[in-house]
Amino acid sequence: MKRLFFLLTICATMFAACSKDDGAKETPGPGGTITEIEEGNDVYGVITDTKGNRMEGVVVSDGFTVVATDHNGCYQFKRSSDAVYVFYSTPADCEIAIESGSPCFYKALQPKVERYDFQLRRLDAPETRFKLFCLADPQSKNATYNARFINETMPVVKAEVEASDVPCYGVTLGDIVYTEGSTNTVGNMVPMRNAMRTTFSGGMPIFQTIGNHDNNFAPVQADSKSSTFNLAFQRQFEYVFGPIDYSWNRGDAHIISMRDIQYTTNTASNSYQRAFTDEQYEWLKADLSHVDKDKMIIFCIHIPLVNSNTPHVQDVLNLLKEYKEVHIMAGHTHYGRNYIYSDKMYEHIHGAVCGAFWYSNLNGDGTPNGFAIYDVNGTTIDNWFYRGVNEQMNDRDFQLRLYRGNAATGGSYETFQFAYGSDVVLANVFNADKDWTVQLYENGVLSGDMTLIPYKSKEEKPSTTSAQDWWAIGYNVGVVGRGHNGGTRSNYCTACYHMYKYTLKDPSAAVKVVATDPFGRTYECDKFYSGSDYSSATPPTY
Image (cartoon, rainbow, N blue to C red; front, side, top):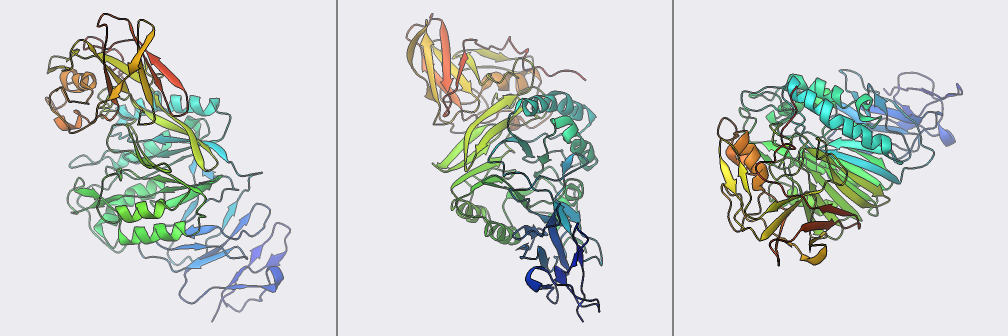
């Protein structure tokens, strides 16, 4: 037997978009057509706009299967036993739906319920220009860190949104909370979700990406709702924040968030590698099959993909590189790095919102606690910058810091000294890559281009080849005592991919450094920092 179900237009005209036979009278759709629900498909529904028009080509998924609505606005598929939600990929010509201050493009799958309809509100025109805010690693584990996030990060986010003349959208890049070992903060997910509501963001919806610390407290077990322990790890995040692998569209950009973390045991939440499952890879292929190759892809994950050969990473990169321009957005490392695969494919590794785990106002590479903003224009990003959030580092133009080559740093726990000599100037340019120009002026006259120090390996002490920021390490390790009174030392002796050096012609000259980004904007600094000047690194007290 087949059942019929009906859809009412706003004009109260009845028609059937999809049908299963339950003895009801059929009412034809456009041109007298009716979509028949195929045997075995137990998730289906109709997508309309607010005027009652049925929408063709809207992509719908449960995180495992991907389909698109037909000319009747109808979708259908067989649900996965591991699925939690049914959701759609917001089309470029529709608004992002908001509920309780967060993006809401999904419905929870219920036992014995098969039909799930959605109604979308169309825009007057697609938003071909918009800003994307990327926030990596808030990594909050208690009320104190929540307060820092709410009082330091979110006001700067809100100010940038309110100052924008184009629409703004946000995405986290994982590790929203901190659950690891015996530390269980899954209960902190709801407060952190609430902290990112549109009320605090200036009206900007913020999408979420899962990180390795956003997991259920170990150990976990596969069960009737989770066929693998990896799925069991993600459930609490999923219940609070929504789908794990999903996509949405703005203008000519297709934005994807995916989990790239796979645990190797079910007893330890820190036993993981960056990887995608077979099912995730197939989901991504299916999702991208609905995206024209002349679009831009913005791919949001937690652990960077650069230099990885773990399962399906290269397969994913091969899928992405087929598109006109690709920007991979990652976090995890608590340092900033822009990796350029080609002239159309970039990976942006972001400094953390929490910096060195909220113990200072600095990431381990000297980058301020903060986030990045990208200006999207059609199928390209034509500007991006990093935005610090704390006092003395929260100016839009604060993009670099200078040190003398022999500067002493640190505190009562440990001291350090840059090993380059008094005639060398070091410039940490937080967001720099090979397309930046960093120039040094002596006594107001251009002296020459500074040279990027290639990062080779993480060191525990300064050397004449070290690219690390020993001023930042001096504070986090030497003043705060991380690695002495708690924490793993290597987490605070962080890699730095954007340290430049220059040997002065006149060691007594007045110095100014001018850094120019790929978009022609310049940033200047003539102030040198030393171990006695840690006022900007010291966090506020709550």
